[in-house]
Amino acid sequence: DIQMTQSPSTLSASVGDRVTITCRASQSISSWLAWYQQKPGTAPKVLIHEASTLETGVPSRFSGSGSGTEFNLTISSLQPDDFATYYCQQYNSHSSFGQGTKLEIK
Amino acid sequence: QITLKESGPTLVKPTQTLTLTCTFSGFSLSTSGVGVGWIRQPPGKALEWLALIYWDDDKRYSPSLKSRLTITKDTSKNQVVFTMTNMDPVDTATYYCAHRRYITTGFDYWGQGALVTVSS
Image 1: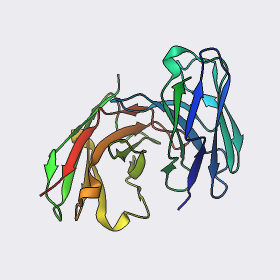
Image 2: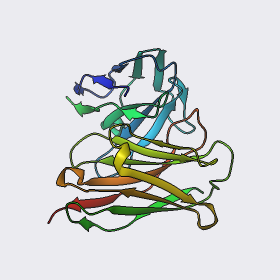
Image 3: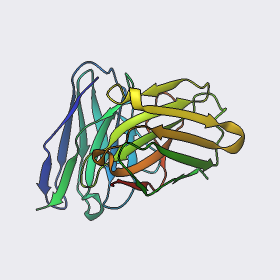
């Protein structure tokens, strides 16, 4: 199994801040990585696939980077709607999710 | 417009088999590249990928749960059926089905989720 480890587990930030969430894979997954945003009581929403391709309709303040075993999700200027939990998912070999990063208001 | 909806029991007893049905619209599971997956989320915990079935009937399972899982599709009914045997209280979770438009993408459409509680 490929294990996905996200850091930090919790991130406190303010509106307007630039934040980065990191996801590390236990072995190389090339660029087969997606990022999701989930708000309480709702299904996840995909933001990015193939590590850096923004899904249609996702604001350009979201960006993804990385390949191999280390990946980042960056939000360039936090908006009130961005406070949520974020998950990475690898789909190189079967699939697996990270443990999540809760982005909370400072 | 793509929609998916999970249906099945809300309560199962330990050792029983869970059967969930994902009924979808807006796409065909016979279209090349398309897949439907199952993901679960215990209350307050992280997402866990369970299984995926592709348009060509290729099936993938979580290695740690493979012996307990089965996924099938009925293209004519626009349904995917998921079963998990030998249910345990730790399997209590919201179970989601989700659409994958191609093998290079993540899950772009999700059902609302179905909370399944395992308790005697």
